[in-house]
Length: 200
Figure 1: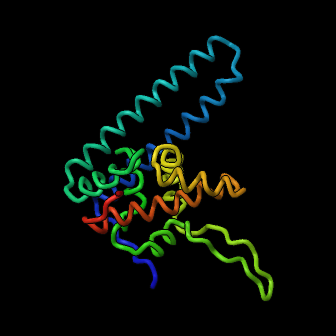
Figure 2: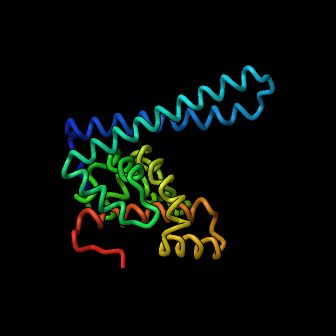
């Protein structure tokens, strides 16, 4: 059964725009910090520090705008509250995921992982059986889930156990984190889809 993409509402488009801009600024800030490491001239170091302060302020402003938008929309507020029940979950993560995956809670686990491009895809040709890899879907969703999974793999007991178990088996850390992303998304989907679903 194919995934059903939702036609964005004006509110969803606003959340998407705010979240996208926040992501852009976070990326700009990371690049500016890296560039700052090689700067020797005090004048330029000061300019860089000013730029970083400005970017940090803009990100903080966007955080408030995203939080206000979610708070005033009953459906978004409910979904965000459910997602924040995850250990390591935060309002920023919830907003980012809901912005790129408004279908969350309306699909089954296979559909939602496929939509996010996290479902393993075969790379077979004839008798040749290639490695299964992820891809396709929404790159922005994978990016949001990647950041969330970095925290979840440390703070969420079940997801940390999954990550540690795979690494202990010799799996590459990137593959283990991808497994965490896939499981995290499945849990997020269940939290919104089923009001009776708990993390116990």
